[in-house]
Image (cartoon, rainbow, N blue to C red; front, side, top):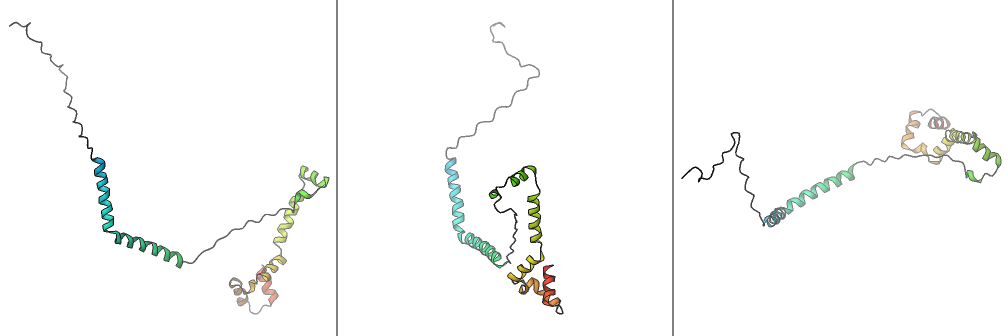
Length: 161
């Protein structure tokens, strides 16, 4: 046979490295969902097996929290916002008043300053002390006990201040 009768042999280039073979594809597991359902059943079985331990732990935490909540001293905090406005400013019909609003008159500021002075007055504080009977309140009893030689009016003035 001659050299022409043979099939030519293909030689790889000198820098040729054979690629690694691809890993085989994993086998498809059609029972995977069934296995997950079984594992859920296993977990439920474990919980049912230890149900009294789970219930006891839950009740202990719940009762400890309830006991702490009912035994602690309640702290009440409030805030108040006092808004000072004129009584029905829309009922004023005079032309002068409407003109003063347009020109920026100080009538509203004077009104508010008057209301502030009334709220800061000692007569209002005395009326609050008398109406709420604050002389007998625990926070104000210490004033009377610390000053036994003073008269009622002097004690009231100390409370007002």
